[in-house]
Figure 1 (cartoon, rainbow, N blue to C red):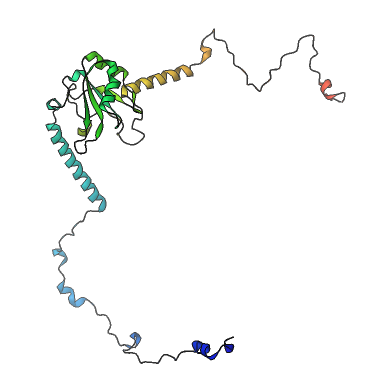
Figure 2 (figure 1 turned 45 degrees about the vertical axis):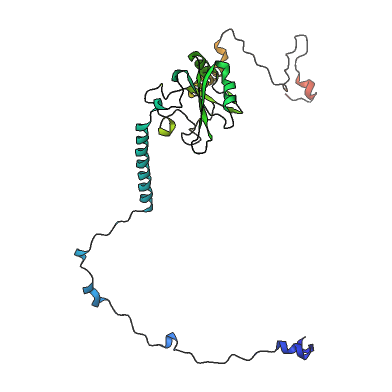
Length: 275
């Protein structure tokens, strides 16, 4: 097809001139005469004697380095915790309530719950003297727990008994007595104490219910009693009738009376029935 093209287009397909040959600048590797390898026997006197060789320096592995850092952090945390425990004294808190035996501890509060809403919810158990909601010192955000001081101790006991698990702003709260100034040797969660069970470990050990752990023990005992009651056989009682309803799709066939004809195989199979 190219022979039919005009000359100006055929010039575009013309072959170029061949590349001119140039001699190599140096000999090729296989053309060079190379010197063979020499031994190291002449340098033996330069090396140190094996008896004078220092012991090799041992370098810790990655696992050992991680374990050492973990151990150092644990020791540092334990030392810091020990110092904070020595300085912690709840009786010197100027913002605390007056009487710890009239104070109710409320935890798991919704972060949007205000002090007025908390007062309205807990005033039903008695007159409230003071409410201390705890806020973060850095950003002034609520920490999710508060202390409520009642005028009378009986009102605090009533709230302790009936307000546990109460839903406020869509979240069930937990109530307990104040233990910092009433229980000897009590420590908060940040110092290694506390009674909370929502951060013990994995999902298999953390509690998921709302309320105190003693309430959970009551629920567990109730569940065990219900299970024992259901597993108890009914025929143990002599006066208990043994009766069970048949399924709806089962038809009960009644026995024929004496005056009715009994079953006859010839009626079913005809005269050709073979005995």
